[in-house]
Image 1 (cartoon, rainbow, N blue to C red):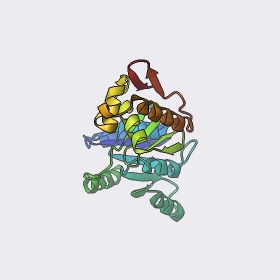
Image 2 (image 1 turned 30 degrees about the vertical axis):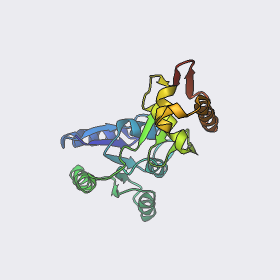
Image 3 (image 1 turned 60 degrees about the horizontal axis):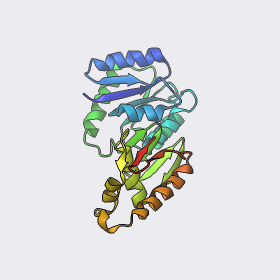
Image 4 (image 1 turned 90 degrees about the vertical axis):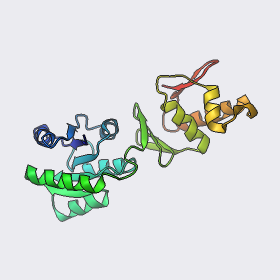
Length: 223
């Protein structure tokens, strides 16, 4: 069942669209916290987004650009602000289509179905790991948090990836060294410590000072 998330601050409209699209066997939800739209999109992992232009806090163009940093998921703008400038802006920011309000629900469904057919096979749909607002982008090896982003080295990336893949678990030093250097028998144990400390320093630049926790004598985990 394909999933659709609706980013619309008029709850009546959002519920109406959701109820209608469920008749087409889509799994549909809508945003409730407009301060953390990107996080909710990541958690729901939709195959399509319906995005209004006029939203609380930040407009739909902003959120479209934020989502496009992480995913190629199809985005259809839905808005009463349907003048030429807004339509052009929507497309330039990464939108795939624009439907002016008020619209016929049958027309909306037809456009969604057509866009779904064209994009079933797109790549990079799930290309990140998210935990408590921290986003590891698997396609460009960056970490972002609270609108800040840092580039990772190869080893930085491998370390944080294995830790975020094992949320709630302690990853032993041996496991991490095996991932980094394939054969840990020929690597000085202090080398991993140096790499961890360097990664922690880098994470502190985006306010993630205590993101990696040391379990003395065992290994590491993320908070």
